[in-house]
Structure formats: C-alpha cells, structure tokens
Image (cartoon, rainbow, N blue to C red; front, side, top):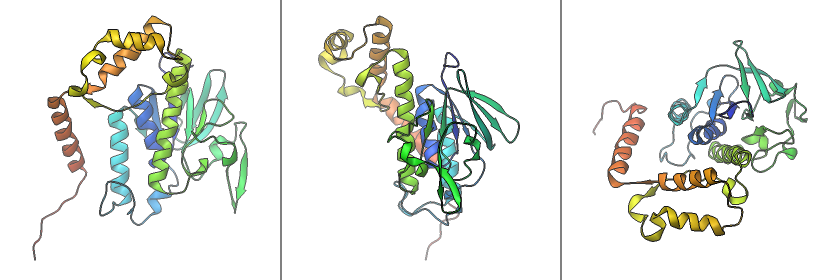
Amino acid sequence: MSGSTPSVAVVGGGPAGAAAGVFTARYGLETTILDRGSSSLRRAAFVENYLGFPAGIDPATFYDLAHDHAREAGCEVVDDMVTDVFETDDGFRVETQDDRVLGADFVVAATKYDWQYLDSLPVEFVLDGEYEQFDSSVVEQDGATPLDGLYVAGPNAGVPDQALIAAGHGAHVGRAIIADVRRADGYEGTFAEHYDWLRREETLTGEWATRERWQAYLDNAPDAPDDDELRERYIDDRFAKYIDADEREKRTQEAHRRLADHLDLGEETTD
C-alpha cells in the first residue's frame, strides 16, 4: 500500500459515500470525501423514509448532518469534483477540477451520475438509456470490482435507488475495505472482519474480563493470528469496546447537543 496508513478516496458525498467514509475513517484509515457535481438526493423535494426522522428531513439538513458525521469520524470532506482516476504502481492517483492530486490505496466510486472520471481505468460501462453507467453486473455484494482497490457504493453497485439503502451499502463497502486492510496486516478468516460497536462496561465480567481468557480463546480459534503483536492488538481492541456509565452519559449529552446544532426550531407557536 501507498503508506503506513492506508488511504481511501471516496468520490461522492451522498448517503453511500458518506457512510463508507464514516466506517473507514473510524477504523483509522486516511479518508477523503470529494463531493461536487450532480446529486440525485439534492434533487429531491423532501426525504420521508430515512430511519430516525419521524417527520422526514430536508436534503440540505441531511447533507449537513452526514458531512458533519463524516468529519467527526475523521474524514476530510472536500468541495471538489474528481475529473480523473489513474491506476499507479501502488494504488491510484486522483485528480480534481481544482487541480488537487491525491494518492489513494482505495477508491470508492459513490456517484450516481458523471462516471467519466473512471474512463482511464480498465472498467466496463453499459448504456442505461441515454447515459453510460458502471456495469453493476461485475460488482460484488460488498462493492468490490475486478480492479483491486476500486469499489462501487450505492445504486450503481446494483442496490435499489433509495437513500437509506444506499447508506447501508456504503457502510458494507467501508467494512469490506477494512477487511482488505486487516488481511494485508495478517488477519485471516473471521478475524479480518471488524465490528464497530460499543458495549456496556458492566457486561464485561468473569473470566472474559481477563487477557488470559482471550489468549486462550486465540490459542484455539480457527484462523486466529499467530503473531504476538496481532494477537495483542486484537485483545486491546476487544477491551476498548467497553465504556462505563459516566462515559455513556457524556456521549449521550454530546450527541444530543450536536444534533440540536443542526435544527432550526424557530419560535414555538400555540393555537
């Protein structure tokens, strides 16, 4: 890979691209989301079927929330249009309308329109009405393509054209990239999979609260790494997933505050 920290360039900052970026950045991958150009969601009048918004949400606020989340996760979100992606000896070179040049180990194509930026790559396109689109028949369920390091997220990967489904697929793509990185690090089988969730500290009890029990588990688990450093990293990650009640309350308050920052409540009116 191109550096000590693998890098991901996400082309398109809609639901699929932002979700992919949240997952890769939270894992610690250097992630850049480049978002400028045609957007199907921004053309919508209102979004009424995205989980978590009982009365719906306007596209502008949705984008603000999604990009704020991506930045909080560690992404750099750039207002720039990708014009070309070239294959290099160690990954990809991404060029933009504003003369940026980025190196990337992985590229996530998360746009619905304007696929010309992939013209220099050995990929297939098909005619969809009057437009050329990426040939979704060659895309795996996790977004992988025949070209190593190139992933497709969202409707052009063959998933239904709905924002919530596109976001879920983007998350799937992000996890697939993480698994690629973990396999390159030496993890195999189920140990290459990474699950991004937190647990309550009070549930960490008994023998599983000791490193010795986890070492014994790794001694007997199929595909467990033999390398001591990988084993210690795996155990460290398991213990880091537990947070106590005070930390949960702190995060809850901060989460509510950040959400409220995006709400235009206006003045409350009564009949």
